[in-house]
Amino acid sequence: MRLGVLDVGSNTVHLLVVDARPGARPLPAYSHKTDLRLAEHLDDAGAIAPVGIHALQRLVAEALEIGEDKGCESILAFATSAVREAANGEEVLGAVARTTGVDLGVLTGDQEATLTFLAVRRWFGWSSRRLLVFDIGGGSLEVAAGVDEDPDAALSVPLGAGRLTRTWFSADPPPREEVKALRRHVRAEIARHAGQVLRFGSPDHMVGTSKTFRQLARVCGAAPSAEGPYVKRTLQRTLLHQWIPKLAAMPSQERADLPGVSLGRAPQLLAGAIVAEAAMDIFEVDELEICPWALREGVILRHLDTMEPEDFA
Image (cartoon, rainbow, N blue to C red; front, top):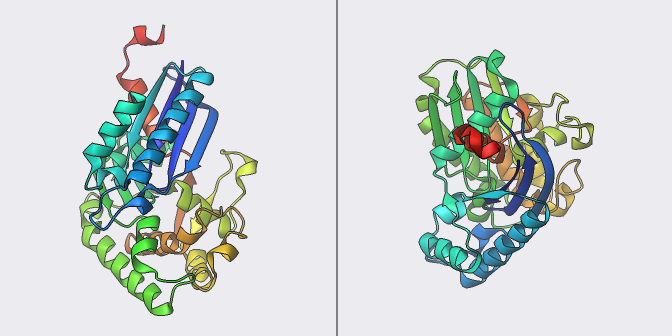
């Protein structure tokens, strides 16, 4: 069957179309992504402004048309931190439902971490034993760890690369004092929550997933995406540590010239690097392996797991 997954995140509205069946890996058939920067449409009261709501309605309707054109039998639509934390989140959801007929399911941070963990577990398998998974999004950092398909610990911390860039940096590139202040804040926040994960034991396999980690790994020398998803890619803490002062000195336009870095994500790369290094340091991770699967694949896998056999007929 052909499924669509519509992910309304802090940075993008992303439709992933896959061919899926029980017992087989979801095969990507088509991907359509649009930068919306929904979190940047917040007003002083923390509500998504009308222009942001209208843009979201238009992009959801556009994604539905594309999904129909690509033969999707159904579309799984969800939203993450930008809608979840908006003061008018319910209003936004209602506006989207009225104009498009799509009921966006809003994932909690813990659900994001749990579903991402499921995707990583399925990608690497049981031989990874105890997994530790990091995912840096636009609005939050998710951390999960465990030995099964559901993690023993799953948490979400408001340390997304986009959020931190907006709230901590006043210039491009930012002043050194702001970089130092953000580093202190990030480390304190991660350290405050680390015990919830570490108390279950040391991990055997440490993994980073999603766009920020993929871009950081590429900057630090990992293989380009053109070489395919099965090439092993890693991110080493020592190399990341060396790159942070370089990224801090670059304006966004210059960061966008680095391998694997998009123009839209370049402004957030420094904040993402600071979060990644802090997480690796506090959890005593020298090297992360990069997983090509993340939240969207986790949503698909959980959906397939809950379907009845006749649904695939």
